[in-house]
Amino acid sequence: MIRCPRGTRDFLPDEMERRRHYENVLRTVAGTFGFREIATPIFEEASLFVIKSGPNILDEIYAFKDKGDRDLALRPELTAPVVRMFVNGMSNEPRPLKLFYFGQCFRYERPQSGRYREFFQFGAEMIGNANAETDAEAIALAVSMIKALGLRKYKIRIGHIGILRNMLAEANVPQDGMQEILQKLDKKMYDEAGSLLRSAGVCDDSVKRIFETAGTTGGKEVLDKITDDAAAYMKEVMEILEAMNVTDAEIDLGVVRGLDYYTGMVFEAEAPSLGAEKQICGGGSYSLSELFGGEKVFSTGFAIGFDRILLAMEKEGQTFRNKGVDAYVVPVSDDVRLEAVKIASMLRSRGIVTDIDIMRRKMAKAMKHAASAGARYAVIIGKSELEENSVTVRNMETGDQRMIRLDELFGLFL
Ligand code: ATP
Ligand code: MG
Image 1 (cartoon, rainbow, N blue to C red):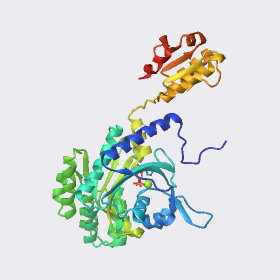
Image 2 (image 1 turned 120 degrees about the horizontal axis):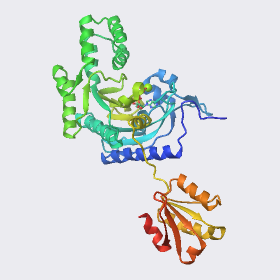
Image 3 (image 1 turned 30 degrees about the vertical axis):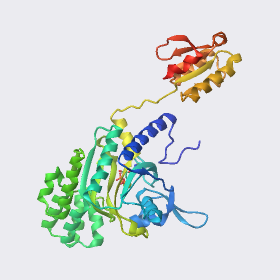
Image 4 (image 1 turned 90 degrees about the vertical axis):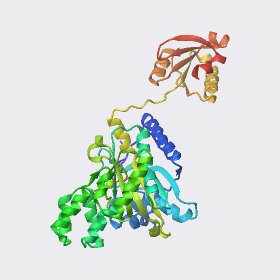
């Protein structure tokens, strides 16, 4: 039997309805913040991702040659495609551009709970500004989206990549060694970070101070101890967030998301219920457009791991009720089938979710099917009732059954 490829999933109707519902919750929230949806291709030139993340990215993505010998890749994320789109045709639009997307991404990863080879990201990018308001807007949107979904337990941690970068620069760590150290600090791998720092010639005292800073967490007052413009900037971001009524975000200077294109504020959200794969959102301010052939424009964005956040909601015991069928039409005998079809069409034309027995089942079996389809009402079409312009409706929940005139049938579903 052929199965779907490793790391991919099929979504059955119940699950798909749930996913569509929550996607639309996110779309609505992004809309209320003035963001507009865009879409980009599923595959791009492989070089787009190499330019953004370096050649090693090719080991982690689905890269291939097409029949025209072009080097392409399935997108592993959408920030690079969105910025490419901006450079290609949106660079004259009024700024900031506020864009959001929902779509699948592909990464050649080892599949496990919350980690797939095909997964979905919901993300937002603001292109055109680098200031505290922009950063606060991005964080507030992410928090509002998480809240709107109904996730109860989550943590938002905000950092600033400049603070540790400045400390590393002051300790004379060469530019090309920084990224690896920052990545280790981000992952809280202090042993590895320590040996990298010492082999870069950093003294024990400085290593200690760097670790202390990377371990700084708490409310905005923890920034008071740090004399760096970046700390003052972060304080401003926190104050704006407070004014936006976002009070559950914490400072964590260990969040550095060790990639070169980040320019300042960086943030992450996690859902502790998920265990190892707990990160549900990541983002920050960055500058990429100049790498893709455009002018340099500061941007801020983030991506929510849609699959993980739904998994976290499940772990919290949240259930989703499918809408189900409003009316299930059952013709009692063959000679009323055409009338039954007409009645079903009438209900459908009024927007009532209507299903009809098309398997020519006997009455009892058809009623059983209506129950298993979760129908609210069975609409039973019998010859003698039709002669009085009536049908029988059964409330499938209570079992109550009564005759109703056809011209009143529609009102039942209001
Ligand atoms: P991780 O450290 O968990 O691999 P990441 O840093 O690679 O995450 P990003 O590139 O920032 O993740 O992507 C944003 C979000 O997308 C993550 O926070 C996560 O929720 C989700 N995500 C990333 N990779 C996967 C995957 N393979 N399967 C499902 N969700 C993923
Ligand atoms: Mg990853």
